[in-house]
Amino acid sequence: MRGVTLSWLLAALLTLPLTGKAASGAWQASASGPSLGVRGNWLLSPALKAPSAAPGTISVVNWRYTLSRPAPSGLVVRLCASQRCVELDGASGSTRGLANVAADETLHLAFGFQGQGALPPGLRVVSSEVMVNYQ
Image 1 (cartoon, one colour):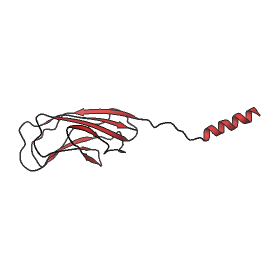
Image 2 (cartoon, helix red, strand yellow):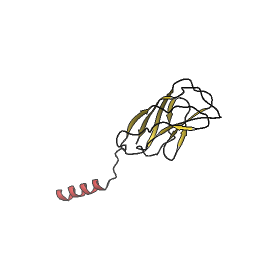
Image 3 (cartoon, helix red, strand yellow):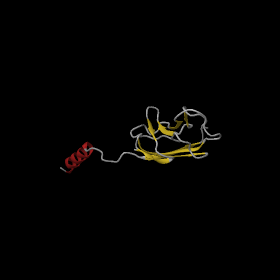
Image 4 (spheres, one colour):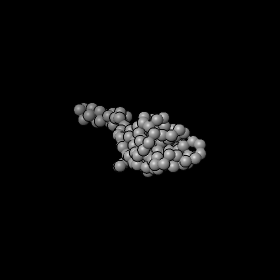
């Protein structure tokens, strides 16, 4: 009788759904560049990618970028994955705009200036940083 009870208990446990939490984690990447010289063009930061495997999907991305001098008027910055970009408000912050994108996807910051003409000499992106949280 005891063997039947244990067998039934084991069978019942094996049919229960798993209730564990999904794995989560974070990765950080940074890069410098590009130089920004002309309005009307989009320039990408070097690739910002996970240093190792990041299984799951993005939940939140924190960003920060620094320019070599104050930003002239018309600056537009986007955080981009291969199939989606999110316009960023300011030089730092966080966004859920890339939620559900693969966590190990390479990201770029895209810098553009509205209008036409030259920008101040020496204007460049000193650093671009992202902290990607994923589940």
